Length: 379
View 1 (cartoon, rainbow, N blue to C red):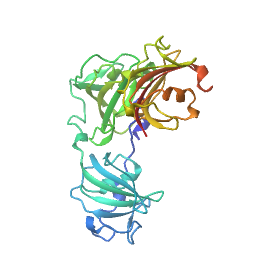
View 2 (cartoon, helix red, strand yellow):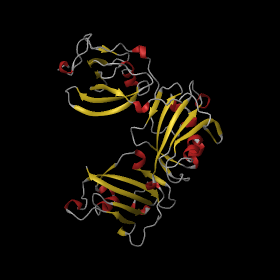
View 3 (cartoon, one colour):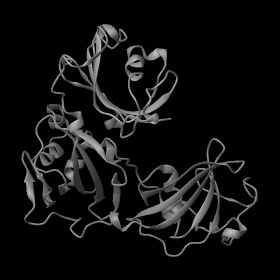
View 4 (spheres, rainbow, N blue to C red):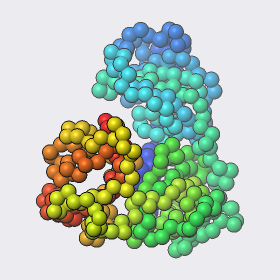
């Protein structure tokens, strides 16, 4: 499994990676009755029909609609996924891009045997039913022509001459500096052209150019330091460095510098900050226009926020929702302590900085905090 390759352990954070199931373990896809069922003839009942087929892991399935040609084992495919209860209520529904041979053990029982346009229903765990529809091959993830080996003009990575790289798109602006946070996307293939993984469908992962990163993953750290914002690079990593039977070709995109994670210029509250209580102050940077919907937040309301906090003495990053790539949900209740008072002076749409001394925070925090907060919406 790719995530066991020690030299790249640090950089793989945020990318899924699994081994492939044997394609021979799954029967040729047809319906439980030996023929495809059209959309109009889907079973009325959500119960497992008599004669439904079973995978080696025990999942029951039927084919609701036949497909056309099968994708290659090296392809990634666009699928529509729906999760239902046994009563037929939809629990979740979304589109996703999955590697045919490298996704999750569950999907690897089905994707290698499905055809484009095919739709199946699977009875899974915890009384859930999956409907999987294979929409198309995602050409965006096809392996590049030079996937097998680096071209003669590829550069070597200092200190790791076995790894070669090329900058395919130069990007713009300055190169990153030590300590900066970067948002990076990656797609990886075996040197045979088989796709391993990608996070191009998401915002990517956050990488910090720190001394720790240099020690844990010197290859990616060295390459990223040579890129400009928006740059696209390709790496060729030999099997000997991966401890695997195959080499890996990887495309990297330095999407953006995350300046919102840079250490604030002021770790102490400025003189014009608004005092909430002796050990806490805040300052609004952006606000919504004064209108009826710009009212101050109230107790027991919940809001989606983007929040980043630093140690008020050292400037070290403590936590950020930017790393998790999703907003935090904050319930404005007395249990928040000083944060309840701060949030009840703000409105939806505000961006502000808060300076809070350790004395105003729970004992386990044990440090002063400087936090940048953006309030998005009530939830």
